[in-house]
Image (cartoon, rainbow, N blue to C red; front, top):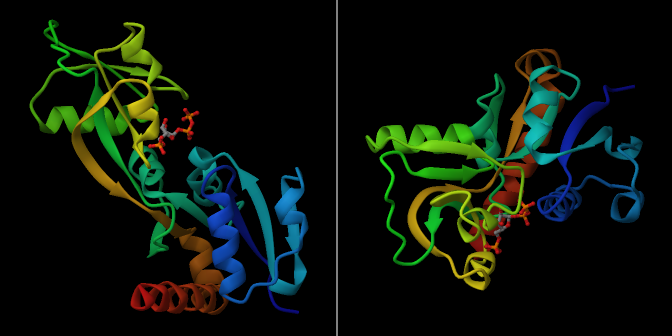
Length: 214
Ligand code: PRP
């Protein structure tokens, strides 16, 4: 019997698109995927076992080798800097990281306060700009911070732009384009090269054919 690969999948907004992509690439995934609350799902016919993790934790599972492969947003990869291979841009869940704030908001402070779920990305970005800031880590609802005076600006994901708009915030600077990536544990890649390369190539072919069809 061939090896079963363990894949770490991000719960939340990337999940559905990632499941669709795998099915389109020819991996039969059980219906459990669509409604279950299970955190480990076996898909023996696909030769895969899935673990469902918080998006920010996917590279951690892969770095530690408890998952051979995983799907992670580029935002998470930039923030976490884990020791994993990023082998393919899946071109799903497109969005971008941006600095946002109140319109006509003027920073009075020497070191403006920046709220973000991405403290490393935010610190790095402002350091490169030669700007001194104080970064405040939040875990969600980042847009709240400037509205109630916790921070002067935010660094966050923008997808449709609705959250910014409905909360009266404006985008100030774009930091990076984001899509989801296929990531691989380096030791697993050596151990299961044939299986992993087969999966990568199937997905690569699919992603490229979708691009051509656009
Ligand atoms: C993300 C992000 C923004 C929002 C952007 O939050 O942090 O708040 O989506 O999407 P939009 O541009 O389409 O409005 P998420 O929904 O993941 O929840 P969170 O606030 O818990 O981070």
